[in-house]
Length: 424
View 1: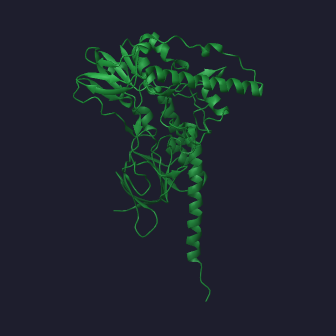
View 2: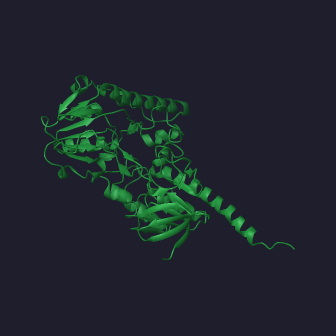
Protein backbone atom coordinates (compact mmCIF):
# COMPACT_ATOMS: atom_id res chain seq x y z
CA UNK A 1 0.00 0.00 0.00
CA UNK A 2 1.39 3.39 -1.00
CA UNK A 3 1.99 5.94 1.73
CA UNK A 4 1.16 9.60 1.11
CA UNK A 5 3.69 12.05 2.52
CA UNK A 6 3.10 15.66 3.56
CA UNK A 7 5.04 18.11 5.69
CA UNK A 8 2.20 19.15 8.00
CA UNK A 9 -1.13 17.41 8.54
CA UNK A 10 -4.01 19.39 10.07
CA UNK A 11 -6.78 17.29 11.64
CA UNK A 12 -10.14 19.08 11.54
CA UNK A 13 -11.74 21.30 8.91
CA UNK A 14 -13.65 23.72 11.10
CA UNK A 15 -12.71 27.29 11.94
CA UNK A 16 -9.41 26.15 13.48
CA UNK A 17 -8.42 24.02 10.50
CA UNK A 18 -9.26 26.75 7.99
CA UNK A 19 -7.31 29.35 9.97
CA UNK A 20 -4.37 26.97 10.29
CA UNK A 21 -4.34 26.37 6.54
CA UNK A 22 -4.26 30.09 5.78
CA UNK A 23 -1.25 30.75 7.99
CA UNK A 24 0.64 27.64 6.91
CA UNK A 25 0.21 28.75 3.29
CA UNK A 26 1.50 32.23 4.14
CA UNK A 27 4.55 30.59 5.73
CA UNK A 28 5.11 28.39 2.69
CA UNK A 29 4.51 25.16 4.59
CA UNK A 30 3.15 22.29 2.45
CA UNK A 31 0.14 20.86 4.27
CA UNK A 32 -3.11 18.94 4.07
CA UNK A 33 -6.29 19.38 6.12
CA UNK A 34 -8.42 16.30 6.81
CA UNK A 35 -12.08 16.64 7.84
CA UNK A 36 -14.22 13.60 8.55
CA UNK A 37 -17.44 15.40 7.60
CA UNK A 38 -17.92 18.65 5.75
CA UNK A 39 -16.11 21.93 6.32
CA UNK A 40 -17.48 23.42 9.56
CA UNK A 41 -19.59 20.29 10.03
CA UNK A 42 -20.44 20.94 13.67
CA UNK A 43 -22.04 24.27 12.80
CA UNK A 44 -24.46 22.40 10.54
CA UNK A 45 -25.18 19.15 12.35
CA UNK A 46 -24.57 19.84 16.06
CA UNK A 47 -26.47 23.09 16.54
CA UNK A 48 -30.19 23.79 16.91
CA UNK A 49 -32.12 25.16 13.94
CA UNK A 50 -32.59 28.75 15.13
CA UNK A 51 -29.07 29.28 16.48
CA UNK A 52 -27.26 32.46 15.55
CA UNK A 53 -23.73 33.47 16.45
CA UNK A 54 -23.31 34.97 19.93
CA UNK A 55 -20.99 37.68 18.64
CA UNK A 56 -21.78 40.36 16.03
CA UNK A 57 -20.59 39.84 12.47
CA UNK A 58 -18.03 42.67 12.64
CA UNK A 59 -16.29 40.93 15.55
CA UNK A 60 -16.59 37.17 15.18
CA UNK A 61 -14.95 36.64 11.79
CA UNK A 62 -11.56 36.25 10.15
CA UNK A 63 -9.81 39.45 9.02
CA UNK A 64 -9.83 38.44 5.36
CA UNK A 65 -13.60 38.23 4.77
CA UNK A 66 -16.83 39.79 5.99
CA UNK A 67 -20.13 37.95 6.30
CA UNK A 68 -21.87 38.44 2.95
CA UNK A 69 -25.50 38.42 4.15
CA UNK A 70 -25.66 39.64 7.74
CA UNK A 71 -24.76 43.27 8.36
CA UNK A 72 -21.80 44.11 10.56
CA UNK A 73 -23.89 44.57 13.72
CA UNK A 74 -26.08 41.52 13.10
CA UNK A 75 -25.71 37.93 14.24
CA UNK A 76 -25.23 35.35 11.44
CA UNK A 77 -27.26 32.15 11.44
CA UNK A 78 -25.48 28.84 11.95
CA UNK A 79 -25.83 28.01 8.24
CA UNK A 80 -24.34 31.36 7.25
CA UNK A 81 -21.42 30.73 9.59
CA UNK A 82 -20.80 27.32 8.02
CA UNK A 83 -21.12 28.79 4.51
CA UNK A 84 -18.65 31.50 5.54
CA UNK A 85 -15.94 28.95 6.31
CA UNK A 86 -16.62 27.05 3.10
CA UNK A 87 -16.23 30.30 1.14
CA UNK A 88 -13.15 31.28 3.13
CA UNK A 89 -11.50 27.93 2.47
CA UNK A 90 -12.16 28.40 -1.23
CA UNK A 91 -10.82 31.97 -1.15
CA UNK A 92 -7.49 30.87 0.34
CA UNK A 93 -7.40 27.68 -1.75
CA UNK A 94 -7.12 25.56 1.37
CA UNK A 95 -6.11 21.93 0.67
CA UNK A 96 -8.99 20.39 2.62
CA UNK A 97 -9.97 16.78 2.02
CA UNK A 98 -13.46 16.04 3.36
CA UNK A 99 -14.94 12.69 4.30
CA UNK A 100 -11.66 11.35 5.70
CA UNK A 101 -11.40 10.35 9.35
CA UNK A 102 -8.10 10.25 11.20
CA UNK A 103 -8.04 7.06 13.25
CA UNK A 104 -4.53 6.90 14.68
CA UNK A 105 -1.40 9.06 14.93
CA UNK A 106 1.86 7.52 16.15
CA UNK A 107 5.44 8.73 16.13
CA UNK A 108 7.73 6.96 13.68
CA UNK A 109 10.42 4.82 15.29
CA UNK A 110 14.02 5.68 14.52
CA UNK A 111 13.18 8.47 12.08
CA UNK A 112 11.39 11.83 12.16
CA UNK A 113 7.68 12.38 11.78
CA UNK A 114 4.45 10.55 12.37
CA UNK A 115 2.47 7.73 10.84
CA UNK A 116 -1.20 8.67 10.42
CA UNK A 117 -3.81 6.01 9.78
CA UNK A 118 -6.95 7.36 8.12
CA UNK A 119 -10.13 5.95 6.64
CA UNK A 120 -8.52 6.60 3.25
CA UNK A 121 -5.09 5.11 3.79
CA UNK A 122 -1.81 5.93 5.51
CA UNK A 123 -0.14 9.35 5.57
CA UNK A 124 3.27 10.28 6.92
CA UNK A 125 3.74 13.83 8.22
CA UNK A 126 6.59 15.72 9.83
CA UNK A 127 4.13 17.69 11.98
CA UNK A 128 0.52 17.14 13.08
CA UNK A 129 -1.89 19.88 14.20
CA UNK A 130 -4.90 18.74 16.23
CA UNK A 131 -7.45 21.38 15.17
CA UNK A 132 -10.52 19.51 16.37
CA UNK A 133 -11.53 22.23 18.83
CA UNK A 134 -13.01 21.97 22.32
CA UNK A 135 -16.48 20.67 21.39
CA UNK A 136 -15.76 17.00 20.72
CA UNK A 137 -17.68 14.72 23.09
CA UNK A 138 -21.02 15.85 24.59
CA UNK A 139 -21.03 15.53 28.38
CA UNK A 140 -24.18 14.11 29.97
CA UNK A 141 -23.80 13.62 33.73
CA UNK A 142 -24.74 10.15 35.00
CA UNK A 143 -27.31 11.66 37.33
CA UNK A 144 -30.65 10.45 35.98
CA UNK A 145 -30.72 6.76 34.94
CA UNK A 146 -31.29 5.98 31.27
CA UNK A 147 -34.33 3.89 32.24
CA UNK A 148 -36.00 6.75 34.13
CA UNK A 149 -38.79 6.88 31.55
CA UNK A 150 -38.03 10.20 29.87
CA UNK A 151 -36.03 11.48 26.92
CA UNK A 152 -32.53 12.67 27.77
CA UNK A 153 -30.49 14.47 25.10
CA UNK A 154 -27.49 16.77 25.00
CA UNK A 155 -27.96 20.32 23.77
CA UNK A 156 -25.93 19.40 20.66
CA UNK A 157 -28.72 16.97 19.69
CA UNK A 158 -31.53 19.49 20.16
CA UNK A 159 -32.97 20.95 16.95
CA UNK A 160 -36.40 22.48 17.67
CA UNK A 161 -39.40 22.11 20.00
CA UNK A 162 -41.25 19.82 17.57
CA UNK A 163 -38.67 17.04 17.94
CA UNK A 164 -39.47 16.59 21.65
CA UNK A 165 -42.34 14.56 23.10
CA UNK A 166 -45.25 16.48 24.55
CA UNK A 167 -44.79 17.61 28.11
CA UNK A 168 -42.60 19.82 30.25
CA UNK A 169 -38.86 20.14 29.69
CA UNK A 170 -36.01 20.48 32.16
CA UNK A 171 -32.95 22.25 30.75
CA UNK A 172 -29.81 21.73 32.83
CA UNK A 173 -27.17 24.42 32.32
CA UNK A 174 -27.62 28.17 32.05
CA UNK A 175 -24.85 29.18 29.70
CA UNK A 176 -25.67 30.63 26.30
CA UNK A 177 -26.93 27.34 24.85
CA UNK A 178 -29.10 26.35 27.80
CA UNK A 179 -30.69 29.77 28.20
CA UNK A 180 -31.49 30.16 24.51
CA UNK A 181 -32.95 26.65 24.23
CA UNK A 182 -35.06 27.12 27.37
CA UNK A 183 -36.30 30.48 26.11
CA UNK A 184 -37.22 29.01 22.71
CA UNK A 185 -39.12 26.13 24.30
CA UNK A 186 -41.04 28.44 26.63
CA UNK A 187 -41.98 30.72 23.72
CA UNK A 188 -43.23 27.62 21.90
CA UNK A 189 -45.70 27.00 24.74
CA UNK A 190 -43.76 24.42 26.74
CA UNK A 191 -43.57 24.31 30.50
CA UNK A 192 -39.85 24.76 31.14
CA UNK A 193 -37.60 24.35 34.18
CA UNK A 194 -34.09 25.81 33.90
CA UNK A 195 -31.29 24.66 36.21
CA UNK A 196 -29.01 27.66 36.83
CA UNK A 197 -25.44 27.31 38.02
CA UNK A 198 -22.64 29.89 38.43
CA UNK A 199 -22.41 32.14 35.39
CA UNK A 200 -21.33 35.48 34.02
CA UNK A 201 -23.99 37.56 32.28
CA UNK A 202 -22.50 40.52 30.43
CA UNK A 203 -24.75 43.11 28.78
CA UNK A 204 -25.53 42.37 25.16
CA UNK A 205 -24.82 46.02 24.58
CA UNK A 206 -24.20 49.04 26.78
CA UNK A 207 -24.09 52.72 25.92
CA UNK A 208 -24.42 51.88 22.23
CA UNK A 209 -21.59 49.34 22.07
CA UNK A 210 -21.77 45.52 22.00
CA UNK A 211 -20.22 43.71 24.93
CA UNK A 212 -17.60 42.23 22.56
CA UNK A 213 -16.37 45.79 22.02
CA UNK A 214 -16.30 46.50 25.72
CA UNK A 215 -14.35 43.33 26.49
CA UNK A 216 -11.91 44.36 23.78
CA UNK A 217 -11.23 47.95 24.89
CA UNK A 218 -11.10 46.88 28.53
CA UNK A 219 -8.43 44.29 27.69
CA UNK A 220 -10.50 41.31 28.84
CA UNK A 221 -10.22 39.29 25.61
CA UNK A 222 -6.44 39.36 26.03
CA UNK A 223 -6.36 38.00 29.58
CA UNK A 224 -3.91 35.11 29.50
CA UNK A 225 -5.22 33.14 32.47
CA UNK A 226 -8.68 32.84 34.02
CA UNK A 227 -9.27 34.17 37.49
CA UNK A 228 -9.33 31.74 40.44
CA UNK A 229 -12.29 29.39 40.10
CA UNK A 230 -13.54 30.99 36.88
CA UNK A 231 -12.04 28.71 34.21
CA UNK A 232 -15.27 26.75 33.71
CA UNK A 233 -17.81 29.49 34.49
CA UNK A 234 -20.28 29.79 31.65
CA UNK A 235 -21.27 33.02 29.91
CA UNK A 236 -24.97 33.71 29.41
CA UNK A 237 -25.36 35.90 26.34
CA UNK A 238 -27.53 35.74 23.25
CA UNK A 239 -27.61 36.96 19.67
CA UNK A 240 -31.25 35.81 19.23
CA UNK A 241 -33.82 38.33 18.01
CA UNK A 242 -31.13 40.83 17.16
CA UNK A 243 -29.22 40.32 20.41
CA UNK A 244 -30.38 40.74 24.00
CA UNK A 245 -29.04 40.79 27.52
CA UNK A 246 -29.90 37.61 29.41
CA UNK A 247 -32.07 38.42 32.44
CA UNK A 248 -33.13 35.37 34.45
CA UNK A 249 -35.80 37.35 36.29
CA UNK A 250 -37.35 38.33 32.96
CA UNK A 251 -37.31 34.69 31.89
CA UNK A 252 -39.13 33.78 35.11
CA UNK A 253 -41.65 36.58 34.55
CA UNK A 254 -42.51 35.17 31.13
CA UNK A 255 -43.29 31.79 32.68
CA UNK A 256 -40.04 29.87 32.95
CA UNK A 257 -39.28 28.20 36.32
CA UNK A 258 -35.74 28.58 37.65
CA UNK A 259 -34.10 25.97 39.89
CA UNK A 260 -30.61 25.56 41.33
CA UNK A 261 -27.92 23.17 40.20
CA UNK A 262 -29.08 19.58 39.73
CA UNK A 263 -27.65 17.53 42.60
CA UNK A 264 -29.18 14.04 42.97
CA UNK A 265 -31.89 11.72 41.70
CA UNK A 266 -33.86 9.08 43.55
CA UNK A 267 -37.17 7.34 42.83
CA UNK A 268 -38.25 9.80 40.15
CA UNK A 269 -37.37 12.88 42.19
CA UNK A 270 -34.58 15.24 41.14
CA UNK A 271 -33.11 17.38 43.89
CA UNK A 272 -31.43 20.75 43.42
CA UNK A 273 -28.82 22.61 45.45
CA UNK A 274 -30.08 25.63 47.44
CA UNK A 275 -27.80 27.90 45.42
CA UNK A 276 -30.17 29.55 42.95
CA UNK A 277 -30.32 32.98 44.62
CA UNK A 278 -26.53 32.97 45.07
CA UNK A 279 -25.92 32.09 41.43
CA UNK A 280 -28.31 34.79 40.20
CA UNK A 281 -26.71 37.36 42.52
CA UNK A 282 -23.27 36.41 41.26
CA UNK A 283 -24.42 36.99 37.67
CA UNK A 284 -25.82 40.38 38.69
CA UNK A 285 -22.50 41.30 40.30
CA UNK A 286 -20.65 40.34 37.14
CA UNK A 287 -22.97 42.56 35.08
CA UNK A 288 -22.60 45.54 37.40
CA UNK A 289 -18.84 45.18 37.55
CA UNK A 290 -18.58 45.34 33.77
CA UNK A 291 -20.91 48.37 33.64
CA UNK A 292 -18.76 50.11 36.25
CA UNK A 293 -15.60 49.45 34.24
CA UNK A 294 -17.30 50.67 31.06
CA UNK A 295 -18.47 53.89 32.73
CA UNK A 296 -14.97 54.53 34.05
CA UNK A 297 -13.54 53.95 30.57
CA UNK A 298 -15.99 56.47 29.09
CA UNK A 299 -15.01 59.13 31.62
CA UNK A 300 -11.28 58.42 31.35
CA UNK A 301 -11.32 58.72 27.58
CA UNK A 302 -13.89 61.48 27.24
CA UNK A 303 -16.18 59.42 24.99
CA UNK A 304 -19.55 60.73 23.91
CA UNK A 305 -21.63 57.63 24.58
CA UNK A 306 -25.19 57.93 25.95
CA UNK A 307 -25.80 56.86 29.52
CA UNK A 308 -28.00 53.81 30.03
CA UNK A 309 -29.22 53.71 33.65
CA UNK A 310 -32.07 51.29 32.81
CA UNK A 311 -29.61 48.43 32.45
CA UNK A 312 -28.70 48.79 36.12
CA UNK A 313 -32.27 48.22 37.23
CA UNK A 314 -32.66 44.87 38.97
CA UNK A 315 -36.24 43.62 39.31
CA UNK A 316 -37.40 41.91 42.51
CA UNK A 317 -36.62 38.22 42.75
CA UNK A 318 -39.45 36.03 41.44
CA UNK A 319 -41.09 33.45 43.67
CA UNK A 320 -39.05 30.60 42.19
CA UNK A 321 -35.93 32.35 43.52
CA UNK A 322 -37.21 33.39 46.95
CA UNK A 323 -38.95 30.02 47.46
CA UNK A 324 -36.79 27.70 45.39
CA UNK A 325 -37.82 24.20 44.38
CA UNK A 326 -35.36 21.84 46.04
CA UNK A 327 -37.05 18.58 45.02
CA UNK A 328 -38.97 18.00 41.80
CA UNK A 329 -41.07 14.93 41.11
CA UNK A 330 -40.39 14.77 37.38
CA UNK A 331 -43.47 12.73 36.47
CA UNK A 332 -45.67 14.79 38.78
CA UNK A 333 -44.42 17.97 37.11
CA UNK A 334 -45.09 16.51 33.68
CA UNK A 335 -41.41 16.53 32.70
CA UNK A 336 -40.89 14.22 29.72
CA UNK A 337 -37.54 15.58 28.47
CA UNK A 338 -34.23 16.61 30.01
CA UNK A 339 -31.85 18.62 27.84
CA UNK A 340 -28.31 18.60 29.21
CA UNK A 341 -26.59 21.86 28.24
CA UNK A 342 -23.57 20.71 30.19
CA UNK A 343 -20.73 21.25 27.77
CA UNK A 344 -18.24 18.98 26.08
CA UNK A 345 -15.11 16.97 26.76
CA UNK A 346 -12.15 16.54 24.44
CA UNK A 347 -11.28 13.22 22.82
CA UNK A 348 -7.72 12.70 21.67
CA UNK A 349 -7.83 8.90 21.81
CA UNK A 350 -6.61 8.85 18.20
CA UNK A 351 -3.46 10.77 19.11
CA UNK A 352 -1.08 8.19 20.58
CA UNK A 353 1.75 10.50 21.61
CA UNK A 354 3.18 11.75 24.88
CA UNK A 355 1.38 15.09 24.85
CA UNK A 356 -1.19 14.81 27.65
CA UNK A 357 -1.34 15.09 31.41
CA UNK A 358 -2.84 12.53 33.77
CA UNK A 359 -6.35 13.87 33.06
CA UNK A 360 -5.94 13.64 29.29
CA UNK A 361 -5.53 17.39 28.79
CA UNK A 362 -2.99 18.64 26.25
CA UNK A 363 0.34 19.79 27.65
CA UNK A 364 1.26 22.80 25.57
CA UNK A 365 2.44 26.40 25.49
CA UNK A 366 0.22 28.50 23.21
CA UNK A 367 -0.60 25.39 21.18
CA UNK A 368 2.96 24.09 20.94
CA UNK A 369 2.94 20.64 22.52
CA UNK A 370 5.51 19.18 24.85
CA UNK A 371 5.72 16.41 22.23
CA UNK A 372 7.89 17.79 19.40
CA UNK A 373 6.02 17.97 16.13
CA UNK A 374 2.56 17.93 17.72
CA UNK A 375 0.49 21.12 17.89
CA UNK A 376 -2.98 22.05 19.14
CA UNK A 377 -5.39 24.73 17.97
CA UNK A 378 -8.82 25.90 19.10
CA UNK A 379 -8.42 25.15 22.81
CA UNK A 380 -10.10 27.38 25.40
CA UNK A 381 -7.56 29.79 26.85
CA UNK A 382 -4.93 28.50 24.41
CA UNK A 383 -3.18 31.85 24.58
CA UNK A 384 -5.89 34.16 25.92
CA UNK A 385 -9.55 34.41 26.82
CA UNK A 386 -10.56 34.90 23.18
CA UNK A 387 -8.78 31.78 21.90
CA UNK A 388 -11.83 29.61 21.32
CA UNK A 389 -13.68 32.33 19.40
CA UNK A 390 -13.56 32.68 15.61
CA UNK A 391 -11.25 35.68 15.59
CA UNK A 392 -9.15 34.32 18.46
CA UNK A 393 -8.40 31.00 16.78
CA UNK A 394 -7.18 32.88 13.69
CA UNK A 395 -4.55 34.72 15.74
CA UNK A 396 -3.50 31.57 17.59
CA UNK A 397 -3.09 29.79 14.25
CA UNK A 398 -0.59 32.44 13.17
CA UNK A 399 1.60 31.70 16.19
CA UNK A 400 1.46 27.94 15.65
CA UNK A 401 2.23 28.28 11.93
CA UNK A 402 5.24 30.47 12.73
CA UNK A 403 6.59 27.82 15.08
CA UNK A 404 6.10 25.06 12.51
CA UNK A 405 7.84 27.19 9.88
CA UNK A 406 10.77 27.87 12.19
CA UNK A 407 11.24 24.15 12.90
CA UNK A 408 11.19 23.42 9.15
CA UNK A 409 14.07 25.87 8.65
CA UNK A 410 16.21 24.08 11.23
CA UNK A 411 15.47 20.72 9.60
CA UNK A 412 16.21 22.16 6.16
CA UNK A 413 19.58 23.40 7.39
CA UNK A 414 20.37 19.96 8.82
CA UNK A 415 19.46 18.25 5.55
CA UNK A 416 21.53 20.71 3.51
CA UNK A 417 24.52 20.33 5.82
CA UNK A 418 24.46 16.55 5.38
CA UNK A 419 24.60 16.95 1.59
CA UNK A 420 27.60 19.32 1.60
CA UNK A 421 30.87 17.61 0.49
CA UNK A 422 33.51 17.12 3.12
CA UNK A 423 36.98 18.56 2.29
CA UNK A 424 39.69 15.93 1.97
